[in-house]
Length: 114
Length: 115
Image (cartoon, rainbow over all chains, first blue to last red; front, side, top):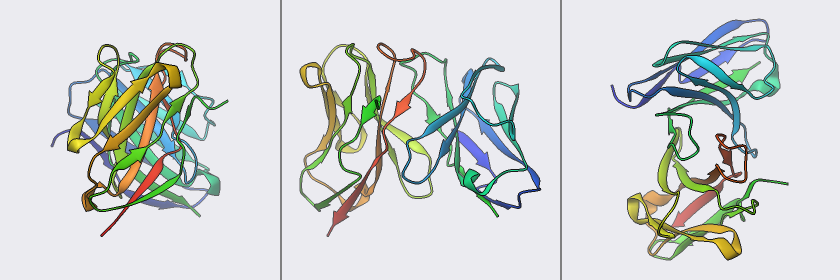
């Protein structure tokens, strides 16, 4: 596989469930990102990892817990979510976290919280 | 104030017509500028980017954008629309004048191409 992959592509969960989103990049990049894309709102940066270390947490509620075991894999652990958390969650990667570094996006996970 | 503004959440053009999608940034210092495209059920894909040098940037699929410092703009154009161009387009900024390493995305413009 090439590029950035995300699983699952669709997820429906109840407010009391615990689930995880997975992202994998096959580009040899050092930086990985989680974004939230909601209808009629700009893309919201959630977390940034560089060389497995978290460098940015954009005031994300603790019900979202990221994990980056290595530079190729990124997880987003979800628990006790709210209906307003329903959105498309996008993973991205870039060579470094520099401002000119192109970010490459996965296809996203469409999350619905009931 | 928004870091980047895309005028028009929806734009509709006829096949073969000029495509013009507008993007303005708010920094007084020229930032790095990007255009991304998102097709249905897919992630974002880079169309083109401006960092330094020539202000007219050519991208994939026949798109280009011109950085105009005096207008703080980076509008995206394509001379002749194709049905396959129907998608949502996002302008983004980073770097100088912003939180340096963060990307700020516009709200997006959905392009509809009529046959």
